[in-house]
Image 1 (cartoon, rainbow, N blue to C red):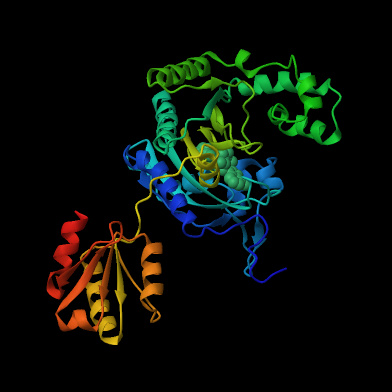
Image 2 (tube, rainbow, N blue to C red):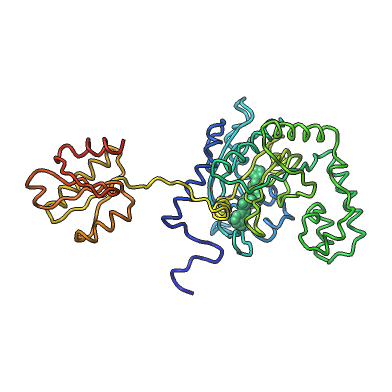
Length: 420
Ligand code: HAM
């Protein structure tokens, strides 16, 4: 193994590509910030119990994929595999739900860790931007979140994604369905692992990707037919609000998410250019999660969009984000005296808010101009001994190649004027 090799299933974000990741994060966050969501940041690790209780002991995430460890002090922690349980934990800890202002709307952006089999679009360290609306049962809130994710993707220029929508019922109707499904599944020819799943989490069997299993599932009872009247009405309202907002979705009765906390509304954003790891984002309602982790009843809804997969989706659609060059002005000193003078000007420009960079390392004119080009700067400031003797620097337009002398004390104004 090379010393410079990042761990398996991880990769580094490196310029210039890293700028796209930042822009994607910002594009997903923008509609949230604009809709009453406040920023929250929680630790990268939590007590392991939070996830085993919240996400569910029987889920792949908790049983196989969690980076769980014991500290030297004997505390059992886990790197966070997802954000919802942490955000709810933090909201409860800070008593945000008691401030008389429900729902508590929060957004977050960060790294998550799952010990999965790595492949394109599936990593052990990945990045999500997410949103949680805590403490309100209102179909408009579910619709709001789906609409905002749709808006984020559209702003990025994405169009080849679909929204899959389902209702998983609530604590009244789901157990009835669960029994019916279990009865059906017990009659099938299934391998031992799957039979075990039938007993622990039968809904997940519907999600089995294998053709042999899918074939046997034809005729399985559908949750849709078991939803209680309240769940049906709730779901119908979410669907109508989405339609009224012009957000297209597909009903997917078999959509079962890989986390145990979901109730009622569940959805996934899938992108058709991504192959097997096609889910770019997902979420839903989790009316029972607060109680699962020891809190009061707080019906809530949220989603998380995968930043890595969203970037892959942009690539798949051939979309290049228009990212403004980070540097506006690049200073090229020729000689020691010019170096001191230009370094002073660079500092002045930066303090005035102009994005400026400098040719370091005593490069000659040719090498320095190459750096200026690479920086993407719109202007170069070039100065040698003769310029300084005349009290000027040359301001060069990197696009037209035109160059004109500017008095040393007029550089800031000249640059501002041209950049305006
Ligand atoms: P999730 O579906 O597990 O949901 O993850 C959301 C998104 O994170 C996925 O759609 C995918 O884009 C990305 N993702 C997940 N695992 C990986 C991985 N190994 N590599 C790359 N990307 C990945 C949740 O995490 C829920 N907490 C969402 C939620 C929020 N539900 C309610 N509120």
